Length: 635
Image 1: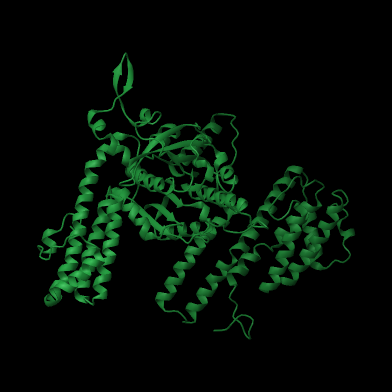
Image 2: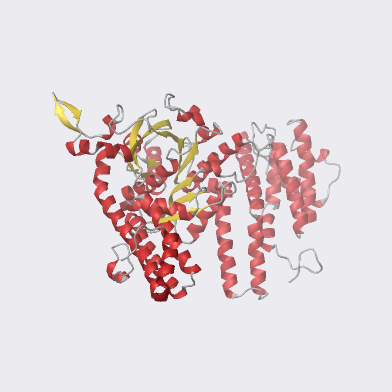
């Protein structure tokens, strides 16, 4: 296969050449001359590249000329002549808008060839006569230049399409490799769509409406209905503070959960994920996808939290399962019990499969998809997230909701700041996530770190406590300040009124009522339930500075609106965790039984070694068969 730049090279940029040729047409060059010759000011202009319309056009022509030479376009010489003429006219126009006119244009050109003459003559024949024509044509020219830069930004993908075709034609790829490369290329191209802002602008609805009569009201009404039916959604959260005050979580918005370190930010995200799925399950489709990204914990540690919260299991029992599973499998491997080890692995796989079924699948009901993804901290960017959303889209999944745990460990997609200060980059990350939420019409929820002194309960919760960068506040849509209040319990003043249902009525006024059953176990409840104080400190369209106490349960990591929710969960929590503990014991006993069955004569030394490794208090050698004794988690 030939290498570009070495000997005879096959042209691999046919498609890119076709794109660039659309910007070098004579009609477009004529339009450039027409707006240059019209005696009217360009007015205020700003872009990422220049604050002057003339400079913007000049930079474009320079880039276009270099691209034409690099691609060796057939009409490259003609293009260079046209560019030179337009540049000359721009220089004169920059000096004075009245110095250059349709009547004297030829006088300002030192040399004229056939191409130059034809270009100027066509411009004179189609000269602009009104300022409104000038403004519309100028806008069109600027939009075309925008489009050029966007083509350049995706040119690598366009070139890859040509390269893929060449590789297939040269039989350098197997059918499987060709399909895989095609799929990867389509995913890359999907991501490039977000760069085509000029195309999105051309395809989008009007960005203004003039209400003047009945027809204009109908047009706006149709636009609003189309937006609500296709581009708008509201998710209930299952938490009274968000649902009653904000009406839920709207699409195309960024929500920050701000708290000090180790105050439940990530746990609240997992709880929101569970409750938002449960509360909106009837509105979700099987291909609708909720993405949960973790940039801190690995996928295995995160899965323990999900199993505990989604399945209502004691977290310590889940941790014990992971620890014991590791110990028994490691022991089997050390002792060389390969056959027994295979049986143990199969039992473990069955056990974890059913744990996932009774936790995650029980919540999703197979009616939507939950994607749990680990990303490397300080290397994953909003651009990477956009590409992942596009990959899922290609595979048929529609992203509806995103959790990012958490933004402080992300990196900007591109570094646009000279000194790359954390203050600026943190704001840029949130701004990029906001753009992503708008493009895909989805909510993005993420924790962020507060300053250390935000743990001081004597300080009011406010956005002044935000850590690293105040720009995070500027670019987010909603901010919720939160902190654990271990100085209080569910019966404390201020908490009690919010987490205990008002049942009694005295003189027509509802009173707090704590049932005798609750009072009988109040010490137990106070030991496992920690109040979390959450305050809405930024809200664009709803009330803010509203706060509420929720209850965090140390046992199953669930967060509750009130004491009644925990009491309702408590029996199931006890049953689930008790069954799981029995299954863990069966798992250990299965491992011990396999050791005994392997070499009965060495039962005593083997058992002593295994006992030491597993640190079990009591071991029964003879047990019923594993299948007969296993509890529901195994089945």
